[in-house]
Amino acid sequence: MDDSVKAAMQRWPNVPAVYGWLSLDARGQWHLHPEGKAADGGPGESITSPQILAFINRNYAHERDGRWYFQNGPQRVYVRIDAAPLILRIADAGIGLQTHTGQPVLAVSEWLLSADGRLYARTGLGPAMLEDRDLAPWLETLRDEAHGSALLDVLAADPPAPASMRVAPNDGSLPAAPLLRMDTEDLAGHLGFTRMPRAPD
Image (tube, rainbow, N blue to C red):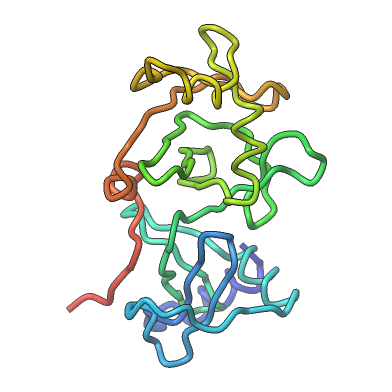
């Protein structure tokens, strides 16, 4: 978090938080909701300024209860999460993963394959989902630890793959971790994040 933001929080500690003004989509893109109606489910307006995006990314954090927010100076702006709090992409160097905020992923303790074909992860940085554009190449690099088989082959096998297994990328960027299948509606609760933070009554 920026030093200037920390200083603003110390100087003005009681600025009320805001809800419904910011969302993060399934491709790691930030969207502004000028009327504060993110809870209505609309797409909002894409934020494209590189300076603003970098500022949001540096000051993006979460509370213990699973609510994620952008610390805008002294004011906390809670975020609607469309898929997961962190969106993963294959790193720029082509080895390993990084978050949409540009942080390298150094640890994954659990992979989760949803019923709708998305791949989620419990990372050392927080709950995450692999961006759809990188899903196929990343699945190609994951291997079943027990047999060394490509995960895509295991998933397509007949009989079907077991409900759980351990997988690791063949680029050596991460150690093996369990992979489980899970219903999409159960993912937020399992990973411990709030999709739509709401103001207290």
